[in-house]
Image 1 (cartoon, rainbow, N blue to C red):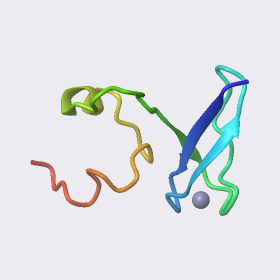
Image 2 (spheres, protein in one colour):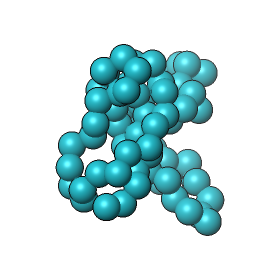
Image 3 (cartoon, rainbow, N blue to C red):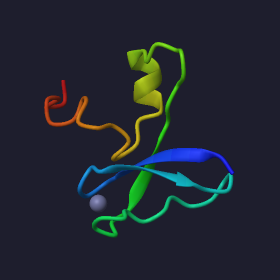
Length: 71
Ligand SMILES: [Zn+2]
């Protein structure tokens, strides 16, 4: 099984889980909150347009959250 990285939508904790392909994201081990898959892109620059297209709640660890006010 592949090792995926997830980020909690509540406490923002990142954790790794071995999950079958296509399975639902696991619960956060700390607060049991919903988590979102962190889409890592190995050896590729994380360009803004792609990041916007793939943006998902909790998928980013602080980057772009809180500092953007809609502009
Ligand atoms: Zn959590």
